[in-house]
Image (cartoon, rainbow, N blue to C red):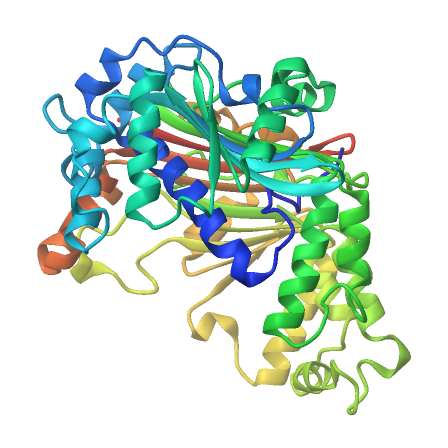
Length: 522
């Protein structure tokens, strides 16, 4: 497992165009109806179905190489948490109809009908009576061949058969897709034989008993309302898909000449998973992926020492791979006037800088761009100098300052004329629109101890990359002032008014790369 979490659940390798389109679309459409039903279904409909029974991974076989599933009866009370959280956002509450009296799936279904599709169907009679709370869409390997599959939980198999037949008929797709009904699930594939084989294999060896699947689910913290999984074998199908569509769209195979890095990354891929869950009035998305062992560069100490009232920050550790790539780019004449990086080298030389040495120096070991906690009182007060924005680089402070001096000399002006203020610390250099904020950046702050920061930034100490946004009263008031001046911005600002903070972090644990996004609401 690795930090190179580059592969996601992927579609099966392409079939000839005349066969691929309708089969895949029919399965996706039926699964899509189910996903919409369980993801946006009205409160009453959600409560009515008990949600007991197997999940998609319980009915699909271990030969499943990719799966995206949705489950509105997960553990830990996530169902109620999701409703409580989503209903806080005005746009979701109004547009998706998340109240006790509205079924948004019905609204979507009827909107599709208004556009001329399946106009003879009745949602209340043909869809609602059999739809369950769980669904999945993915690919299964049968006889070394990738096969598409969609599974939809059913509450009444008899009514489901009637409803699905009507759905296939209204789309003129009876001979383009096939299905098998079990007591708990509708299983769709491109042929009935494939659907039956998938059902039989799932009963014998379900995906939930596969060790690789279990390990990746554990890496993202267990079950979620939405889950994604890609087995190691998915990379082979992704490579085939990239090659096929590359030839169709670009006229060449991206995995052939010049695609060695992509090919190697796919060969090293060890699987991936993701989970979306709701808890504590917020949303959490966890992703994990495996490949070659990642680097050890970290930005945790850098971010933790920022001012405690930081409103926003984007920070990353400069990876060794980037340093190597920059150094290699200048080799073999790459930085010569005729080389691919010649223009960059000449542009930097014009202000007295050398490529890539000075670039590597100013990158340092880690970099952050941050905004301080003091927001302007109104949009009338917003100027480049009124917002505390700062760039902080950890590295060889003396060498970084020398490069800045070169820039000032080569450009013929001082950064303070902009105004931009430079402050040097022991192992860091800050560049800010305000002298006071530059001073704060090179001082030792306590953002790492801040409760809001800690609540949304996971594994902050070991992080390789961090994004953090805090919406306190001052910044919220400024956004509301924006909304008063621009009516089109009002819905966005109303949703932002619900937010307390957003955090994203990436880190590496052995050969497993992690990414976690958290959204906290008020």
